[in-house]
Image (cartoon, rainbow, N blue to C red):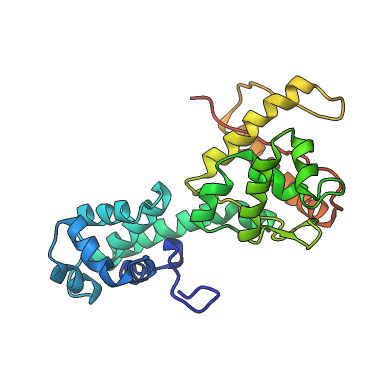
Length: 277
């Protein structure tokens, strides 16, 4: 599959063929010329064997496939999908191949559930996600750059009670990644506004944790404008499923409200529903 620039996508979910994905990732490596030899060395195989795999005259074993995932540092869910791609190609019957491809489709549906229902699809590249989701401050500066009264480095630093030097560094990174724009007078405005992190991203746990830790500050302030709700329940499996559906519907219903709203306040919205294990 091609990306928006017409190049073969390096995202594993965009592929139905593991060899095509393998080729795309090898060509995208900084040292593309020696990438195949580097992978062969990592796998402990002859480069000629890898050439046979790429020319579809041989297949990776499952053990080699999981090592490929290590080589590319694939997050767990992307590795699962890649292994299914390999299994489907190696399947000895059409029935078995169809089974693996059905498993892939289930993963894709699960991955797209939130994106489809709330209608936000813009995502950062994985390398940028590593930085953006390392701390709540990046997201906070990103959003505050769109709000009246916090559209300069100094104003954001004062609002968040953080050093100007730290905010200046973060703004520079956000500008580089087109998330924030700065004019000649140092006035900031937002670039890419709404971005989504998929549930399969290796950064999603850090993203959720960042803002839940920040919530502790809000609890200490105890502002009457805020709302905090926590419940510990014993309910049926059917009720659990119904609660999840209603929360998903709620997110879908409020998306137009958020999209059409003027940027006046920076707020944090958190929803949690999980089984106690």
